[in-house]
Length: 165
Image (cartoon, rainbow, N blue to C red; front, side, top):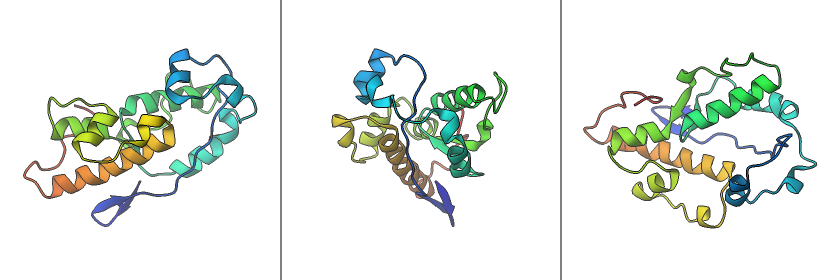
């Protein structure tokens, strides 16, 4: 996500599968439809780390349920020996969490990505057939853009926080 004037716009997209160097949870296989054989010849995280760092740069990191994304990045950066175990690859302040923002705009509403998109009247039908990081990122970006517009045109005001409730 990139700042454009008073709002946000989508930036460059890039995706890569990553060899996890270990077993894959059977539930993750069902959700993502990625089998271990599909990852046999894809890069390991240290190989794509320069591209990840370059792509993120100094930009904010937009995520739905950002703690999952933060924990994944922290784990992989530590495994690659870029940070120490227990450190964070990126400060919490860099993350913009659409789940938190959504909960502030719609208290009591179910906070899943699909529920959020349904409530915001964003098309999430592609998720019915597949689930993937790039698709989720695109839907999250659309949700952030829409929620920011709603904040600007309502009496709700600015969110209390992007990353905490």
